[in-house]
Image 1 (spheres, rainbow, N blue to C red):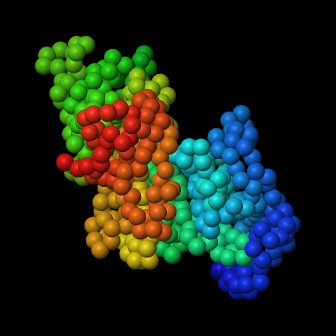
Image 2: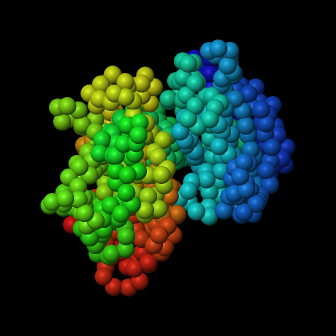
Image 3: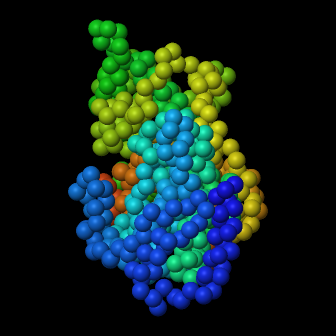
Length: 522
């Protein structure tokens, strides 16, 4: 309430300030930027505000702890950092919603909320550095960009902040609207006019943040891009446990009776599986290229590999087939009801031999969720073990986005088909239920990205969802095929098509040229 009242005062003050303010280019940018530190707003501390000069590509560190640099040039911008509602919380720990805002001198009139990852806990640089934008960032394009730690400090998977109620609420859903509204107000103060459109772009937790904003704060954004969204993390964890238990059940034991999961489905058998899936599904898009673009038509059944007699090098044992069906089919309770979605037989999800660091099939680098409790029961784990956090963060259940859509809001969902943590089919299921719940609206699209793991890796390096959603929101141009280029294994370019369409090779021409593909549905 204290912060909300503060914002009401801010808005009133900004209206008069915006009317009197000169355009940003008519005053000294450095002084104008530094002046933001003098703002006195209830509950808001501007810790620093300084003008950052333009920097060429390859000169700005991506992470101070590494030597990696950003592959994009960055424009001159005013970088603002601050804290909202600083306070002492549970056990005397200091909390507050930290934020960083970049206000570019070449502002295009738009604001982008940059989604976080895992449990947040740190402020990512507000560059709008989205993997899929390649050599450009949202900041480079002229967006004002804001990011947040979501109300606490900590390592990505540190959940100790959950002992503080307000910190839990801030992470779950409060930080996104709080910092976004502040970002709009600061942009209005700095530029003399408010953003004409606002967007959210994020993957994993960042995808969930965009979804929950559409559900709880439909006025906040005009366009949302939600990638591999962490919609219901508990069911996801149960799905990975389910796969782990399935393979442990058939694995040989060591001297202490513990399973040896790497021997349950060795590399040779993974190659058999890969070859069988590729034989059945790879050419469904008109081209054999180790990419299944027509994933909707891929109805693979591992039973085709089952040995008629004893296990040998050319087939799988009945126990291995059962383990595959259990893992890829998704967890089900004792009545056969699904606890979580199944996983697609995408080629890069079929084991480490194809270069994917993690898979549902046991590998040398285990899935971080692959440590099931003992004893493990799907009935108990799905109903009893659910964490209170999920009741706050879950974006799977609420599908009525009528207010968001009626005001012109648009959502693009995308998901890596080889994501071993959050199933592409789960996001697709939400997309389809959302369409059914809003039959009057045609304001969402879903894109499957073959070969891509969780948010990145294995798929294309560039696919411009940001331009697609901006054109949809501001020009009314609904997205069709989005060109994806620089594929990890294949190179070249292909179209990502809105589900249920897929990119089909026309049969002639360079198969690495997206112009020789068309989006179609059979």
